[in-house]
Image (cartoon, rainbow, N blue to C red; front, side):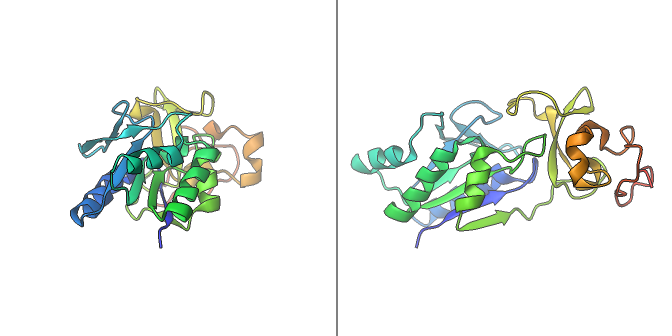
Length: 224
């Protein structure tokens, strides 16, 4: 039985690398698949990894219909057993529903890869719908590290080395602008205070909030 599987994780945890590895593994067993990319750091119509891997892919636009894409390929005789969908957080909720329909009605496996939240800790629409519909949600086992050395749990946007919570949700190309961050660096005294206190003030030094924050393990400079 086909499944919709969402592989999630922060920046730098190897999502695109795993996507390309899975495509290789399935191809080696004689299965036919289609790779989809969206806003990849290397440009359009490509899935790239920070390790240097790079493979052509179909670019997903706001008007892309995954059901039509699969039907068109199968009609012309292509074998389609699975889809690799990278940067799935950028897909629309409707497109995620199309992927779920492809799984249920065409018996095609869909492997989606993406981050859950943006630099303001809000779910991307595509990620939210994937969490709601996926048969499996798997957190990648390769742990990206925060600048404090702890396991990263969120994504932070930085400008000139300073964390910011302002700007458009999507910023592609400059990977130095988005960094993985640990929850101890993103969260202060309690999560319900986030809307009242700018996230830029919830970092380890030089950005320390004026009240007690959870210490980053191994970082004695954090507020106590």
